[in-house]
Length: 166
Image (cartoon, rainbow, N blue to C red; front, side, top):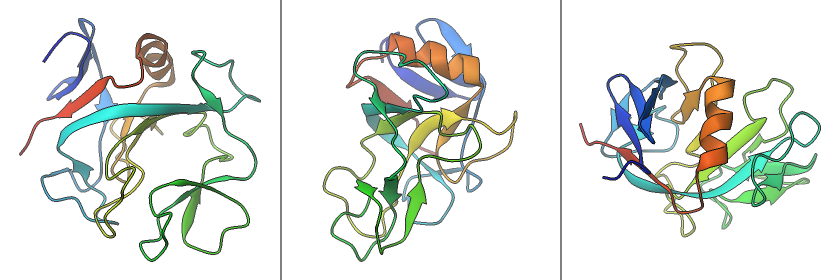
């Protein structure tokens, strides 16, 4: 591990000498993540992208991509684009990225089960804004808005997110 890794600890995520409180999945940590279990998968994951709402935020980095009105994330295990960014119209099960709440105003994408997704092993493990302190996610890692913005401005594609095995 290096100071430039995002490392989940009992106190939060350690990054560049700071510790940021965070929320994890309602299913806790899992060494064997499955679609819909609400767990945060253990292991070493890499940041592979950043999405942001241009109507709500300025791009935190030059490599951030704006979230458009048609942007979705497929969580449909039966589709070839499972665990991929897709566009409306989309017949399969999906999650809207352009939400009415602020949770996905800024999203850091991880390489969990990506790009060659195995059906049933879970989709959409993001770093995003939390609802409130301690409120669990569906498996993502969530932060206070200002902390997430600070992290986003420091990271680069390939930054590691390390979630120790349980």
